[in-house]
Length: 256
Image (cartoon, rainbow, N blue to C red; front, side, top):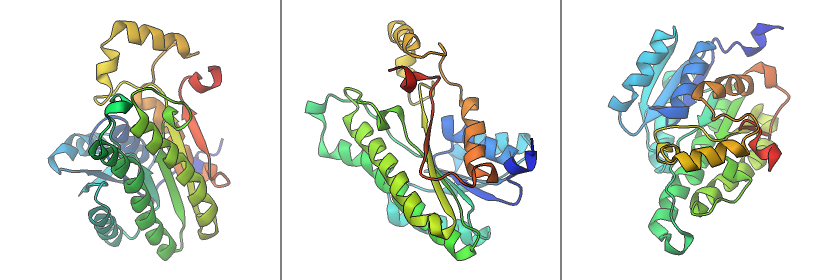
């Protein structure tokens, strides 16, 4: 195998929502593959753990305060980051928000909070990153973090599922439009991963046992399980792949 295909040395990556959980793991993985990792959160202090982990792994990181639910603020932050680091080669649209609620009780404010982060925010981050990729002439790779709810309906998660279904559609549309610019747009759909955001579910023994029965590999995902796929989609190893979404789910979708 030609390991150079997966080498991200000399590349600049930006991972939104990378202070913890899956975003943190993906940022560390990209740095381990050689990329300079731009990490973002709504507060600078919350990025310290990720920054230290990247440094400990032998990588380099740059911290960036950004709220993706505010397109103007996010675009300004991305533009400034790109100017400072000679462009952006890789964008991971990871920042997201979820709150379960019976559909009959969903308020407009909750709908907006979820969709503004997961869908609108992701679009305008991609738009600004694409501008820098086009300007540099190097093209780039954009990876959107979708969900199993991009494919299946989950009760009490309608705003979230709608936003993630929209994100999958956006991935396909942007891949078609930006291919001529050398920009590849793909997505990943993580399955059941235990994170701070989802920990409440995993504390329920009955729920945990029922979910494991639905996963052919009979285990929940670990944040480390995302790194290889993200590096693959960010690197030249996937240079002829665009508009695709890879489910990292232990076989869940294949079995339903």
